[in-house]
Every structure is written in C-alpha cells, then in structure tokens.
Image (cartoon, rainbow, N blue to C red; front, side, top):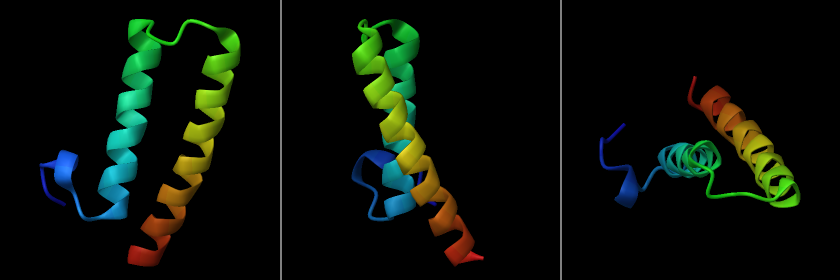
Length: 59
C-alpha cells in the first residue's frame, strides 16, 4: 500500500483513512452529540465490514 492515503486509488486505503479520520474526530471531541456519534459509529461498522470483505478478496 502507498503511504499517501489522501490520494489513494485503492478502496482499502481510502476506507482506512476514512475510519482513522472519524475515530480522530470522536477522540478529539469534534462529534459532541450522542446521536451524531451513534450515526458515525454505524458508518464505521459498515466500512469495517467492507474492509474485511476487501481483505478477504485480496488473499
């Protein structure tokens, strides 16, 4: 994988960057409402499943 995830062509790299960005926002307190946090965590769960499926495909 490339180290430049900002312009990554690989969907796995883009998904990993997105997950890292969301988790960083959660940790730093940018997302303050429980409803918004729940929505974001649901998105993270869906993206994590996509990453897992993509990883299996690569094996």
